[in-house]
Length: 121
Image 1 (cartoon, rainbow, N blue to C red):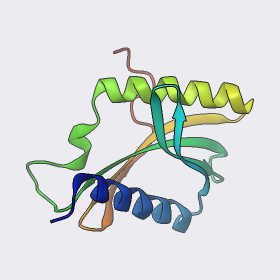
Image 2 (image 1 turned 60 degrees about the horizontal axis):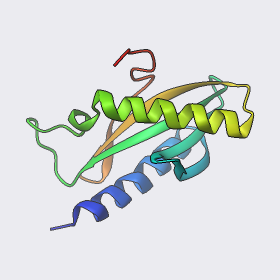
Image 3 (image 1 turned 45 degrees about the vertical axis):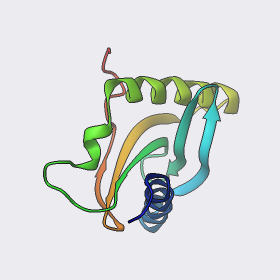
Image 4 (image 1 turned 135 degrees about the horizontal axis):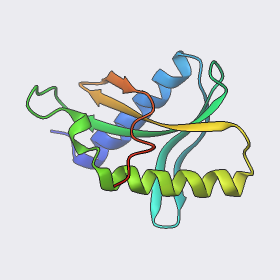
């Protein structure tokens, strides 16, 4: 059985490969902004936006415990804070969004676009 950290590392690699395959350009991975982390920073050239992607991974599929279940309002808040810091530091003028990639059994099983940027939690 894989360790939780190994599942996460493998999931991030799978998510990065998926984003590249669909035309995104990976700008950075595992970016620390203060206490917060951004799993993947990418450019979506189709929409011309910077994508801050969170990756949630599971070793196995389980219909009762989907990877997206770990995307809490607190995690979204931390992602928004880190994304804003990254945008300011990079002096980026493009639009941006938060995406969630769910990985299970070695493949991306869901790519949720624009997850909760504007929720007020």
